[in-house]
Length: 78
Image (cartoon, rainbow, N blue to C red; front, top):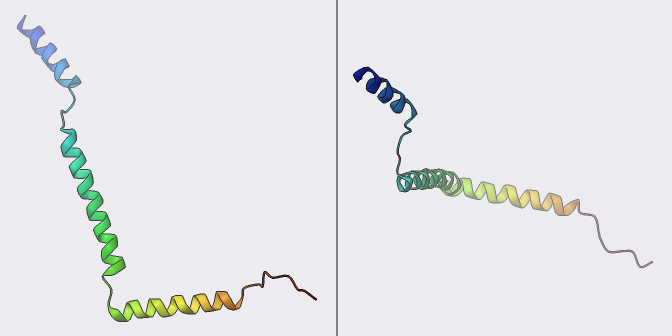
């Protein structure tokens, strides 16, 4: 009989899944999300004044170039 109990125990152990705490999983996911957001913020806001100024100037040049190529939407009244 002891042989049967061992085999039953082995089959039971093979079918048992790991028990986990949902709250810990939620907290771990929130921590990963916060780390991902912090990394994105470091990229976006962790720049020198000169880098920010260069980006503003490049954006202004891009906007001027687009405005210069804009077609006039108003119909001619001639």
